[in-house]
Length: 234
Image (tube, rainbow, N blue to C red; front, side):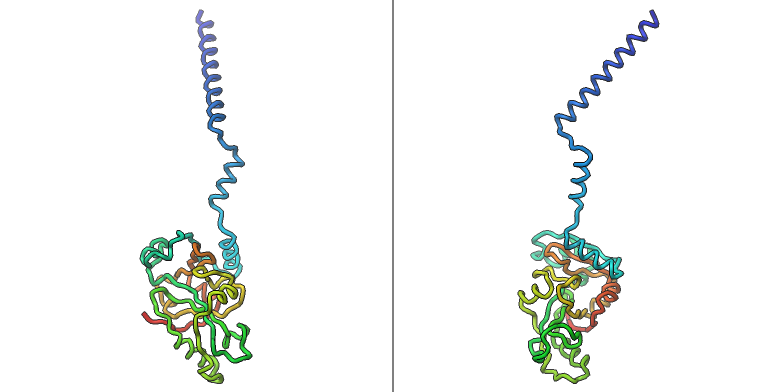
């Protein structure tokens, strides 16, 4: 009798296991659980970087820049005070928030129509802090000295380039301009105040309005070889 009882218990256990497995199967069907490949695809999509970010990252790494980061920001980011922008980027301070502006020399000599001569270019990109006041006069004096006074000072008159000109030269729209991957090799001027920042990691446009780029100052300088000019005040 004892052996028969053991067999009945095993049969009962097998029946219960079968019911549990069938119930699990029914639940999976009712929930329409995705297969493994679909889950992997969804995970890839959720973490996917934009073409702009991927392209700029490739350019940076190719030129030996390793300490950089991209961060997405909300569409109303530019309506926020600087303190909120600082917090969104986890920047060290509001002074570490910078922008790239395209300037045109409105008094350039008639033979100067492009950026082929970085010492006497028709256009320049200047990187300055949002907390600073850009001083075009200091850039004018710098370019005059850079050319050893061989070009009359009145031939240097730096003004903000029209929006359409900026887009055409850089390939980036307003609030998205960055010095990396521009359509045109425009000479870059970096405000000396940024070089003095501590820590030496600042934020600027990332090629899209809602994308910001943080980069180590020393690596930025090594890659782009900008003119470093004291061209702002507070």
